[in-house]
Image: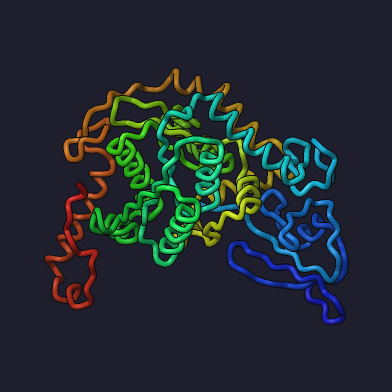
Length: 75
Length: 326
């Protein structure tokens, strides 16, 4: 669920694709589920928490902040 | 996930290789891929002077970084295209990278040398900016490399770039381009410098990861001219296929190189190169494509200046200068 008003500690997700936007997700889940929920292709992004890259099976806690960085550039 | 090599916690998974690596082993994987590509295609050796095309993006800065790290003699060349703040930021990233590491960076400013930037060029010739931009970058890289005595030009094109280009060439059956698309284009005559793409087996995602792991500060913003570019559409299509069927992108490009390209080359026309009548650079016709394009742009700029000089001079438009491209 995105941007739920009931969440006490929503997961913060910063997306740089390449423009920066921030949103919140409720609850803990795996990186692959975060990407699926946000309709982001795992082949096109890197997911970072506290400066460390995460694999798709990594669990992200509800109170975590993660950054999703687009790896695709044009030209 | 655990690292394939040491069993420690992995930071990067590679579905197409059915593997994952910890940080040190990911860096080792990445650098091995580059070294293997260099050796397999005999791109250059440690005695050669290499001119690296450096845009300020993750691919070119990572390439420059890795070549220096592996002990190659690499000098950077940045072409300042004059695309709004994007070009200023890009140049800033390239310059900072070079200064922090004590590397030599050559900078060429398009507007200063040829009288107009990429945006003005596109407006004059009434074409999409990307075609004039790409042509100008290729021309300047070759010319600078030749005039400064470099053995080879290296660019940061990666697997995604090459697969997207291949898809475009196949969709439009560009036979000539299919015959020439390769990670190595040998020198043809002394004025056409050898061109290589050492990152061609690595994806953009892998290059971005390498840049992050080495604290390479690159321009994250997209070129303002990129939205709508066909290359982005092709990359998106290929990424979707790759997510469903890992390894497809690599097979598409690498098997093209091994099996299909030789057939296109066998059926292609051989062109004889001669010197461009204006600039002396190699071309298959009387005037090279670069001179034709820039001459057209400058003719139109001069014509517009003649028709409405007062307005332009009043707002101080530098683009109205008519300067020979050479």
